[in-house]
Amino acid sequence: LRSEMGNVERLSLVGQMAAGITHEIRNPMAVVRGFLQLMREKSPVSLDHYYRIVMEELDRANGIINDFLSLAQNRIVEKEESHLHSLVEELEPLLWADANLRGQSIELKLDDRVPNLYLNPKEIKQLILNLARNGMEAMSEKGVLTILTRADGEYVELEVRDTGQGIPAERIGKLFEPFFTTKAKGTGLGLSLCKRIVERHHGMISVHSVEGEGTSFIIKLSRLADYPAALPDMKNSKEA
Ligand code: ADP
Ligand code: MG
Image (tube, rainbow, N blue to C red; front, side, top):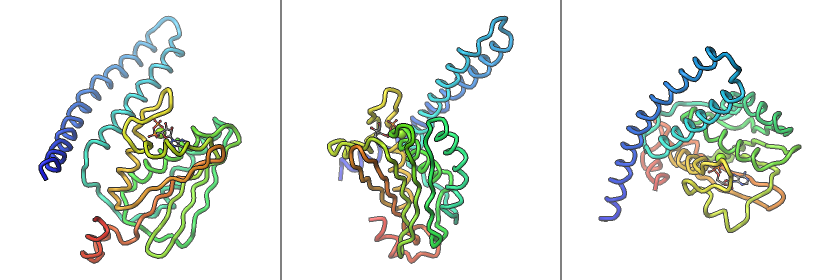
């Protein structure tokens, strides 16, 4: 029990520190961004090339800070009745833009029977985007990223499938650990954030991968989870 309490206290302390540090870092970064823009405008020589690189790196740093913050803060997220398919469709242009740059394509296989779910739309979009980006990064040209949904009784499944390099079996257990990455510019925060988001939605996430063939991440959400009208005892058993 003691170590459990220590854990809870440590988590909230990390959460508070993360919020504070994030705030303190974001401000100077915004200032840097602004002055950089000014420098480019006022400079007698073109700084476009350097400007683009610095901006990309600033955005990357910002992304890491945001991921870290949403990971460290175990806040209760606000949920609303929404539809998975409309979230996927909102992301579609973004996904296609990424895919086009890589010579890859996107396929959607959405099950019409999928009902509305009680979700945090922003978080679920983040989840899909993280999984899709990983999928694209694992594929070479001509790769196909497929997003599937399935209605299965009480559950709704969301699958993000790629035709990429696959994941060696001995690596599967490490994927969801914060900071685990095999990429030169990876943060290793993407999948731990995905796991956290799925947990906040009382769902399950699993991986299936065949080396050389591809990988599939499957998220299983209960259609009853978190609905204000859900029976309290059913809710409790799901959270256990
Ligand atoms: P990052 O993408 O920054 O490396 P993630 O947490 O998103 O961090 O992913 C962690 C690691 O899991 C990746 O570095 C990669 O080795 C592996 N991985 C994740 N998704 C896939 C995928 N679809 N195919 C192959 N490997 C993957
Ligand atoms: Mg990633």
